[in-house]
Length: 310
Image: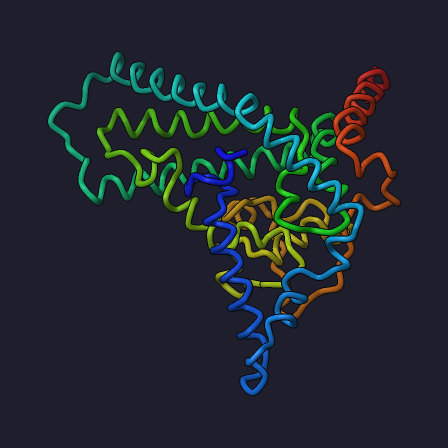
């Protein structure tokens, strides 16, 4: 758990959570009229941490998923990162064998590192979008991803409401996209992406610190207009969780909306809060709000699908 909460590059680091808290406080203050921006701390606490949210069975299940997936984090993702390194090395070596070494080209300065940072970030975002898209459109994969969508309230801990099978599939897709991109960058002698030495990517970390944790929250923070085609705001992702059929299969991106815009799956939110309910459409069975039910039910449903196929 310390490996998740302590390193600043971790997607769920304590520092990034604190940053998200400051963003949330600033948003609440800016939404209020100027004469009402002096808010008592108790009022602010109720706005940030409403009792209805943290007393909900869905949130309590998120806590248990957080504990389970935190303990399993290294086992699920450690080998996937090795796979990305292996793919990167293989791609670089293959390009060298067929095209020759790129001797004399030096991109290790600020410009080269900036391009490499952006390229890896875009590769990550495309891998995330593709995995997310497949998880909604391939029935077998949906059974495992559906665990995440059984959440009936959203909090930052909902990030951990995921099935290990979903995580493993994502890890492999991510390894292919990021590893291939990194291999090409290495062959072209681009510099090391900013943040890579700490185990992350500077642009991805910045997105997490500013909006990442708030995407699973009760705060309606909407990016609209032209910028709404570029950035996945918290409201974008809350629409993705909506059980309104109008919102199904929309907003698959992690931080960027460009892939959704490009592939026709973008739904830009309204500036004012929309009335949304979350979940999988029908009444969520009680066992879907338990780790055991969330882990075992998808296997049973996937097996039914396999047996039903001719």
